[in-house]
Image (cartoon, rainbow over all chains, first blue to last red):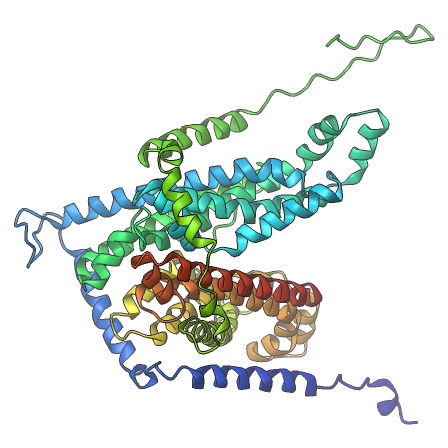
Length: 291
Length: 274
């Protein structure tokens, strides 16, 4: 046998990738074909029109805040008023996301201990896990529309509670995974020393899983700020309701100011939260890397 | 609790129990900051649970209707519900496919492993600006051009590019440098490095991110209809505005089932991938 044929391994077959790739393309084509009302022929118009709207938005953002926009009912209105209003409503969005996250954290934390395999028996685990999965599956907007708006009316409390209940599901799942992945040795040690269930949790489990769980809370807060914009569309508080109205009314200058406020505040909160999460998870000795 | 001064049998010096370290100022500051933020936020949104008591009859009235869903809507395969759901599914599939494909390219431009510094230093902040806008904002802008599923697809595509590109570029940052060094030594171009050493390493992670955004898209496309971007969200808004709770309930049941089914399926696939 020549050394060439003996040493070189045969490359793995490529056909499985080809088959999966072709199947995916087929599914996408069928999906595209099934959308008979999609008006695909309008697609080429998008770049030009979006660019035009973006131009008007930029104009709104760059105009001196003291100037008066044209065509408004109130002649006293200035661009500065738009900025202040956007900031105030974005503040409301952040506040309702924060309260929602607090509600989610407060309820998911104790519940997760009843759902983790190393802290709870199966007859508690199964119902609590099912509860987490069930509320995770209901989008916030449905929760808001069916339960929270009738209860709280068209105000930020409805949005905060919708976000809060939804967060119980997702935070609960992440927290229980944190509990299940703790090092079992400290738990065994305190058990051997005669600790009760509660002492075991307090001294061996919570100290191990708390930092990661708090980091998840912060991450969830970032996600919830984005979710709160959606809830605005059904008038459950925050900047979403006005954004919906302004963009639908094609008031691009005003909309541009609102979008810039959303982008700046979101990125700012993300950066602060990322730095805090890094500090919580890795301690003070390492330097956070900016995203 | 008594200070531990345990008598030793041999009469030697008693071991001293170590003192519990005091909480760090940062921890105190963090907890205090969180409390202040909560109070301020609660004040800003007029936090009150009183409506739960006041409005309870209203809620039970609605729930009464919700527990009697319009089954005909679910059992009839030609109903508006199923038509809208098919539209939602198609939107999610197309947006996931197109968005993920573009995102792979963007991810390669966004990692210092695969792109020159000048490129990734620009790509990363652009990506974080794209991500900072919620999918709803994109949908609102795109429906100004044309209504129907097309703006929904475009909005979700951009949303997916943001998420998949971020996660994948972080995976690329963490690839095993061994194969890269081997290729550099053999004189590979950037493109060859990406194709031979980077993409095969991140492919399982990438596939799992794609499935993850597909899950997100199914949920999101439920919502997009609320602003006129096609799919089942339009039905939600329609029945909500008409206060037609039995029909709304049938929509909720179906969405619930679909979301759980897709979550389970994609979780199983993801567990196999990674």
